[in-house]
Image (cartoon, rainbow, N blue to C red; front, side):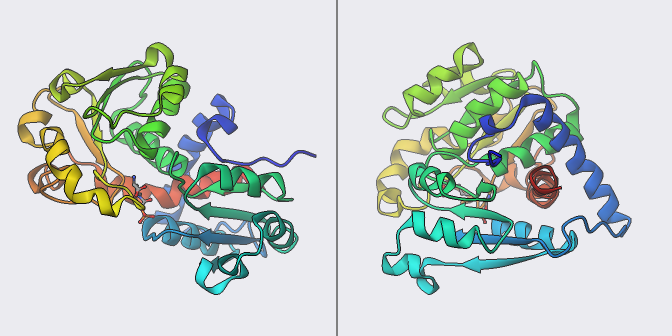
Amino acid sequence: MTVRHFLTLLDIKHDALWKILRRGTELKKMQTELKLYEPLKNRILGMIFEKSSTRTRVSFESAMIQMGGGSIFLSPRDSQLGRGEPLEDTARVLSSMVDVIAIRTYEHNKLERFAAFSEVPVINALTNEYHPCQLLADMQTYQEYRGDIRGRRVAWVGDGNNMCHSYINAARIFGFDLHIACPEGFEPDPGILAQGGARATLHRDPVAAVQGADLVVTDVWASMGQEEEQQERLALFAPYQVNATLLSHGKPDTLFMHCLPAHRGEEVTTEVLEGPQSAVWEEARNRLYAQKALLEYLLV
Ligand code: CP
Ligand code: NVA
């Protein structure tokens, strides 16, 4: 039997993804009512994280505990991966002992190599190229606040990074129009953008991207692994800050999202992040429920 992985959003059929979003909201309601739901009793999630994480790690660990299972967290520092054991060997051994594996790493290709040798589902917990778990939470959050995102207009402002790539995939799958504004030289990968077809449009001017938007999204200007570029990027990205003036070009009820962590005063002002249009705290909370729905889909 082929193993079901979640390396990008494109790995799961559209109707199943829509179900996962709705299920996330149901699982949130069940948890609020303190209903015991333990379909993952004795099941184990292995986690290999080569980059820092607060939300992704805690949401996966909490999800496993709430669903009756458990998790094992490995950083390269305390596993043999950090001493050069090949990914392919680690994949075979780890997947013979746990039921599902979440990986946060650098090159997406490392995740694909691991998945090719894994007996159990592998989940992308962020790579340099994609962050699909965050998109599940973002889409669930939009649905909870505003209903169906199909046919809506979404603005991505800032770096054409891993989050932007996952938004391009989401635009294809969930049927919204994505307007991306990036500084020159920081556009999304041309191949991924091309796959977005008519759903993804590139702009230079952030106002053009935000015009009439139902949802405005941004992310840090320097992602993990790009810390040395931080200073140089500050000046180049300054016109792409999401502030009250830029947000005012969206629809009057436009929502603001950010995967967090945020750098206040850089990609977003405190006024917008903490303002009435910001959905960021619910978006972060929904990481837990979207991933519970994902784990249920992959394992139950
Ligand atoms: N948004 C997100 O993935 O956060 P962490 O880096 O804290 O996991
Ligand atoms: N683009 C950011 C997202 C962090 C959750 C990064 O890769 O660092």
